[in-house]
Length: 317
Image (cartoon, rainbow, N blue to C red):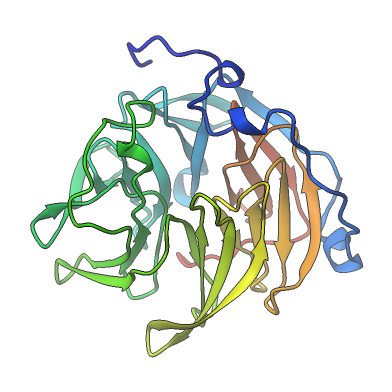
């Protein structure tokens, strides 16, 4: 655990959930399609004891889920039905995913970098600067089929010492980047969002999804991928008073996203098809389990799960 004396999530104004204590999601009439995905309508609490859980990533060959507890500067893992520490300290890791070799690829607020961690917990810094200047605090990411790592870089991890270390923005923006580990090159993909946050790509890699969680912007956007470049930005949904934080696509290209104290699901035509209520403010989610049909949900202090009649998109198959 961190040596900092930290208040419980519901008592600390710095916690992302604090401002939403007394806010609740509106009712959504679920479509038959969405209801058919659900084996039940209630999520199961798997673990509690975090301050702000984030970044769940499932490692198939280990049948293990790793996830972050950012303010406590640690990562946890769910394996064989029990939760134990995976990394402590984690250097304030936030979002996590895996590459084709099933290494864990992580966004580190503390290191202002992208880490790669193998099964032996050997850690490598993949990228930590842009044009000689420090990254802000990488937030969320995915690995494309060509092995490039796409990640968002807002400043949340350097605004205070709650989710990282206080620091300055050096390159003057909040970009979405693509890093090529083969060529060791970093490219700016999007540079006109206020606070790019969650990011995912459709199973056919024809659509890119990015959340913007700026001061008065709580949007999820969809882009058409044209020759590997995101174009034709469209608004999927305005989540105010909540926000879309982390999300994943299922095998049919539906987007399952955090949406306040709920998960919202949008079809590939950007239509809302359903909502699943969760007891706490949701940060992120991941499809896991041996069949890919367990939806794991990080929500403030807890990890939840629900079994589905649907499977996640598997870029690592």
